[in-house]
Image (tube, rainbow, N blue to C red; front, side):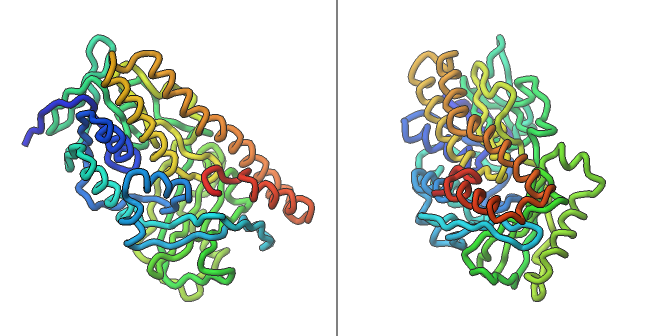
Length: 381
């Protein structure tokens, strides 16, 4: 059945980014419709980590209590683990969380609908409609929708990229990752610690073991695309090799389902994130932290910001150049500039691993100082 209609703002994608944008707009009294190709609840391939600042944004959307009433794990400590087993640790003033995306995204979807925003599920957007150089709506196999402003929150491969004439991100602006779930993983350092493993085999990347949710742990590998392209190993082999290195923690472990792979567009994005009638947010805007691969806080933050800017546009003369610039500058200050620094830290860690400098107590002390002062994380206090 063909879905047709119009709204002041159309948001493409009902993940964390799209929900944040939709809630911000609905609370501002703007007629907003959010469309997603999936039917909720639906799962999403992810590391499932939500930083403490990410949870603050979940609370802003009105979904914190619902999230914490469902399956989750606390992350009170984290460690960078090097090939010789040496560890650089830190504790958090406020815990982070591991929340399965099936649960997290459905809680955010319910908050979106509670805000008064319209949601259309099981409806794919295949292209954005342009008239006189401006985005004026969206089309899909079963969709015809008019809107003077569209927020593209549909992740990697966004229809917003095609509308801007941009290619998909690649090389240093893209990472690839494989993740899987295991039951009965051991946690010798404590059940609330997230371990990040750095190794020669994962340049400009790392592997992880996260705290278990209902006995099931998320394990994965992450590597920047240009470093991966220089490899002679496939992601499945890198993942298998990490599992072998972590065998002491997996003696009693049982896999739950099959590993899954996904792509992560990294900040800082070297291309426009707005155009007349269009804002790109979340993964669609390439806002993922290049060092950690974190994207949920970035998605929530840019989604909310896009919603605020779109509300200003709806109340005035539309998405003019000044509002586009405001959005771009705000994203740069909050994500782009810090991410540029994170990329340098990533390359520094790569050098430390290659030259085995982690064996030095002085180097480990310096890493510990930086870790505790947000050099390795920007959304955890």
